[in-house]
Image (cartoon, rainbow, N blue to C red; front, side, top):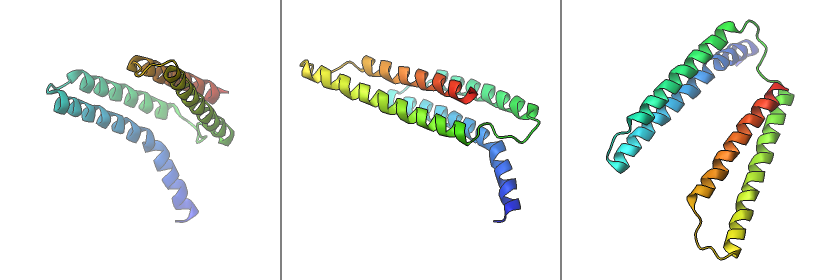
Length: 140
């Protein structure tokens, strides 16, 4: 593969990667609906309709974003990508350490089981903090 072929492949990949991600998200919603049907016996139209609406909205946003783009500058450079990677690494290790320390404290206090609700709180707070932090790091 020569340099010219590589550049055309990179342009093609940069254009179609977001659409691939959106289609995989829709495929995950469809698979989730069928898994709910398989295990619970009722088809969940809410998951399917939510995934379809999200895919349509994300596709429209991506089309508008690509139509408005005039230059060939990349979204992020190497420094920003490195900062985002380091932020993800630090926050994931931080949340895992919080999880293990809290589970150790619960075990030392004599609790044999823990409510799943507390684990969901840690999980969703991780998603929110990482998502908002990545947006802040990307803009700087």
